[in-house]
Length: 299
Image 1: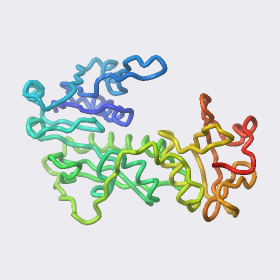
Image 2 (image 1 turned 90 degrees about the vertical axis):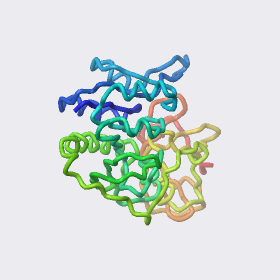
Image 3 (image 1 turned 135 degrees about the vertical axis):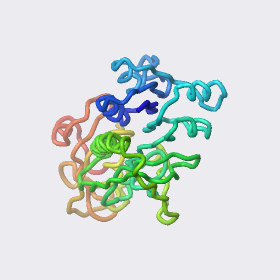
């Protein structure tokens, strides 16, 4: 098929590669423009742009698709289908209507649960037992379109957003390659109105650990925000990111250090298994404790 690919972050890269490997003709790759990043704040191309350029594909990164010129340029591609994966721009109706077979979105949740920007983070933070990937026919609403294909997967007890992100990305890549040649025979499933939840973008204000919460909630927050933006706590005036954890037995006033990196919560305790000091690399908890004194209590 003649495919327009639209995506920006790491999550989208395996999908683009899978489409190329399946011998689809990628007529253009749309992604977000380079953004300032790093200590020098130099413009850095997105992971999708870097991948597309390495594959010799034409890259476009318009600031908006709302202008008549942008929509005309998209229509001139005469695509059979557009595949959209974490692109970052809303597609106007003129863009949605341009490909012969419409625009397909690969979404990392079991719709209608967790529509929106951060479905992987929210599923772990909420303690969902499972999640998955949906291939959805796009329409004007936010992740409201009919689902053409879905696949579920369990969320592991120690899974982080980072590990789940990679699994779901690979799932989505395999699913879209299967779905494209079968589009005429796939039956659209209208999303039910019951069970709709919204995965709001992660606010950095959510990232500070509140040790007065139950251990289960603290553990889910740590794993759900790992590796980015990273839940954190204050250790003797230093902000330390907590990137891995598990619920353990233990009791004490919230924030008390029970031994090692076991911290008392509102109920129960959490063992931090991976952490990162400011300006340092992430490492296992036993390694980080060789140079970091927790004291008696964490804030």
